[in-house]
Image (cartoon, rainbow, N blue to C red; front, side):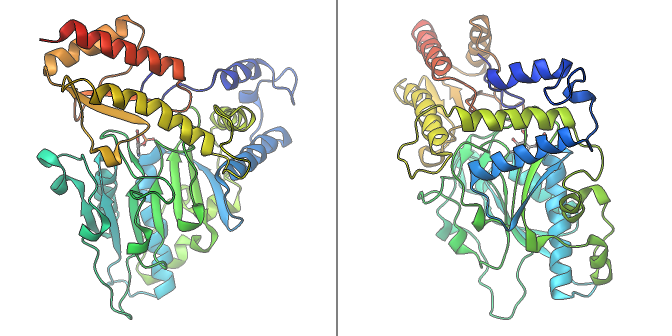
Length: 408
Ligand code: PLP
């Protein structure tokens, strides 16, 4: 039972097909999928199918481009800033000495790191919310209601930030914004609708419906719910695509061509040689999500990702119930209202030695990858799409046994 935070398990059906295709791909008999040109018709089909399936699953509007990029989530911490700063400089015809602001809602370790990278890339990174100041014990445990955020009121004519950035699910801290229309959803209405919202959805991508039209940019590293590591999916609104070189006259910096969203969009993500095998596996995962959702659609009008959302709720609530009924033996680290359905983080009252024993005994039972992120310690069970209900039930049974054995 693989509960790693990423890379993490993928659907067996997709992996079996991928394994067979390494030797001989159906469209190129005798040649494996990793052995064909990225400019061949066969690979064109792979990307076209993946894009179509992704558009169906996420209901992506026609005015958004889907890009397959490299360099992981960390590269996007910089790419989002560089592209949107350039867009903003061109749009407002700034002077080179003018500063560009980027606003960050910092709710965990990854958005904190993104804000730091934004500052390195030259934006004035302003925290409109800082979870460390709000959370218990100076830790990322909660998200304050938007009324308590520090969002500057803008004068009619004053300039706006180039973007507002947040992370939808904080993988390390187990803190997640709510889904579309929920009370804990990202507070879009706190911000001027003209300001593009950027979301890092690396660790809850494809786990629930998303209203893509509310975003300027959504990105996700593949290695949780989408596929193997090596590719990052970027969904970007077309009007934000600009020629980065044009921004130089308005004070922008030269940016590597590989980081330009416009280059990637103009070349259908083939500006250079993309990670073809990784993209192929992603295409199989997407197809498997469409072909065999884990639960039936709640109603015929439900959105395509609704079954995966119910599935995630069902699985994570089993673990959370176990924490909450453990009389303090286990203590969830995140506030109940913003508990992640993907990464369940908790501590053991018995302390670090008992946490070590938990990880060891779990591993002996075949339950792998439950140690917390090295920066925060504790326990983290990551329950992505490919983790089954049976796996979670086995985990919960183990947790109960462990508690009975180690109580008092
Ligand atoms: N953002 C989130 C939410 C993550 O979980 C991770 C990695 O786990 C990253 C960004 C960084 O991604 P990468 O390692 O692909 O650069």
